[in-house]
Every structure is written in structure tokens, then in C-alpha cells.
Amino acid sequence: MTGLVYLLKSDLERHYFYTGRVGKEVRVYHLWRNFLVPRCSPVGIYRLSRWLHEKRMVPLAKILTWVNFFLFGIEIASNCEIGPHFYMPHASGTVIGAMSIGHHAVIYHQVTIGAKDIMFSYDARPVVGDHVLIASGAKIIGDIVIGNGCVIAANAVVNKSTPENCMLAGVPAKPTPVRRRPDEKV
Image (spheres, rainbow, N blue to C red):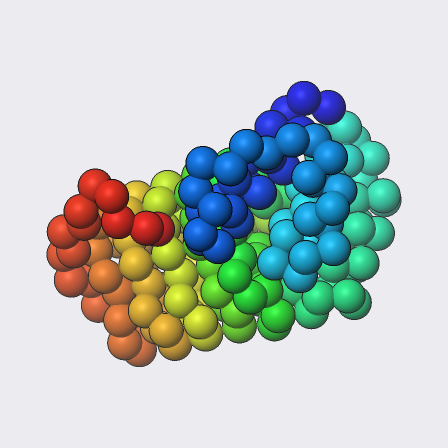
């Protein structure tokens, strides 16, 4: 359970970071209280679903995936591995069917990350790097890799692998190099 608790605490730390409470210590009892916050609940439910999936309790994991879908309008596959410090300021209408997403990811609402074709196997899905920000309405489709430090603009459609530290905008999205300050929020 320590792995699950670590991930939940890291996600809550990220929530505190973006809500102006940088450095606030996260205690286990904060996890339960913040489970009622719409920005934290979908991520927490996903974490529980993923933990059950890893423990080979797949039917229970799928039930939690459906709970997330019905309560928050978000679909996150329990077999998608998402690193610590995951944050979703608004989750509604989001579909996450990636192979994996790195740490410190920020994903806004109405985002789709998934396979290019209708498929029920878990092959040919995107891999998203660390410190990636995905803005509202963006689509990341296919067997591609999004490099670390990328920013994907609102409504961009990304269907090709990208280098690190770039801004992707347009339909189809074109990469533009981005320089970040070390203290910049992502």
C-alpha cells in the first residue's frame, strides 16, 4: 500500500502546488478529506483502479474505471501507468488510453490520448514523457512518443512523435522549440 499512498500524496502535493499552498505537508488523513475535491477525486479513483489492476484484481479495477466515468465523465484506463505528481485541473470529458504518462503531467479537460484505430487490445498507444502539459481539447493519437517537457496547445492534434521541450500547436500539430525557466510551473 505504500506505493499507492506515495502516489496519492504526490498527486495531492501537486494539487497544493497549483492552488497556492506550495510546501504544505501532506498527511494521510488529507487524502481522504481531499477525495471530495473534484480536482482530486478522479485522480484518486484512477490510482486505486491502477493499484487493483497491478494486484491482478482487474474486475474491481474496471468497476472503479466505470465509477470515474459516471461520476466525473473521465475515462482513464487502469492499465495506463501514470507517474507521480499527476494533476488534472478540470477532468470532465477526458479520455486517457495511453501506454504510459511520465511524472509531473498536467492534463486539462476534453483531452483524448489513445489509439489511432478502434481497438480493444492495448497496443499502438501513445507514450507521454515527463513534465508535459496538455491543454484543453488536445488529441494525441497513435503509436507515438511525446518528449519530456512538451506543451501541447489547446485543440492541437498530435499524430507524430515529438522531440523534447517543444510546443505543439495546430491540426496536425507542428513542433516549435520552447525554452523553460527552471522555476516555471508545469
